[in-house]
Amino acid sequence: MSRIIAVAAGKTHAGKREQSAHTTNVIVKDSVDVGEDGKRKNQEDLGCPGVGSTTTSPPTTTQTQTNTSTMIEIKSLSQFNTLKTSSPLLIIDFYATWCGPCKVISPAFSKFATQHAASPSIVFAQVDVDKAKDVSQQCGITAMPTFQFYRGGKRVDEVKGADVQQLGTKVGYYTGLVAKEGPATAAKVGGTAPGSLRGLINVEGGRLLGNSIMSSVRNIASPPPAGYAVTSTSGARVLIYIPFTQAVTPSHLKITVDKAAQQNAPSRIQIGTNVPVKFTKNEEGVEFNDLDMEASLAKAENTQAFNVFSDEYVDGVAELKMKASKFTGIKSLLIRVDANLSGEDTKISKIKTLDFIGLKA
Image (cartoon, rainbow, N blue to C red; front, side):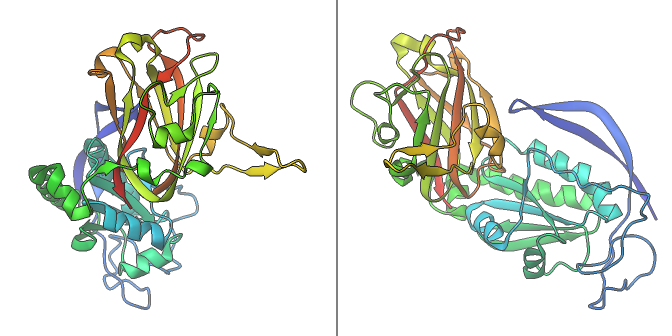
């Protein structure tokens, strides 16, 4: 029997979450398990067959799985293993694009992800079982949708079928545990305690664009006793490419500015992950790269934008919270300062120190 459930629609905007009052009635049907031959054990049309089945939805119906900015799409086994071991709580939706019940429950799962987007300890992810077959096989997926819960690298629970009520109960229970434990305990579950990642910066591989001659990636990795790590050269904008020597999971970007010159403090910042940068040299040995102030961020796997106001610089320090769903197991960051507190395009931006707080992946 079908059940009608009201699902509230949510959306994200400029790094902030807005909750819509609009609700949508959706018909929820339970999934069914399948045997090794791919045939349903129950012939009632309540769910989708398992991985590897040739059953598809009618050709006249277009089905698209919701993948919001609060979730990460797991595409490989290595990515899954990184997320599993580095996340205090990992919740995964295993789905297929042709699965009707998967699409029915997708808005509810997206809503749960949005509700917990501010927590760096909770990661919501999705796996397309047809694209990441190695992941779904390792996790023992035989029917869709299936939702699995991981803590400290181990699977602790599972929900099969498009049951919003059961999924919501499980999500509430495990997210409540993480919230009750607090950041310190959660960090022990996922790995070591968060700390500065500056020691893992690949100084030789980092680059700046639009910077003054006194700025350098080395000054970011090892802040000078006086002066600034990064300043722009002629206007507010500056581009900072930071590769790491190993995969990391940053949770905060920490910016320190001069309290006496706060008008030079960044006010609009965009951050991208894993942007590919091509380096070449001519016959004279002069290096060239394809970093571009406008185009490079478009190549990022994930991005997050920040508007930083003057009252967020407490004693000259602002800490920007980075979404765990976007910054887990990353290998490089691209940071673009677009404006500063002066509000003038020609006013240069100045950063005394720049630090990345997080964990080794």
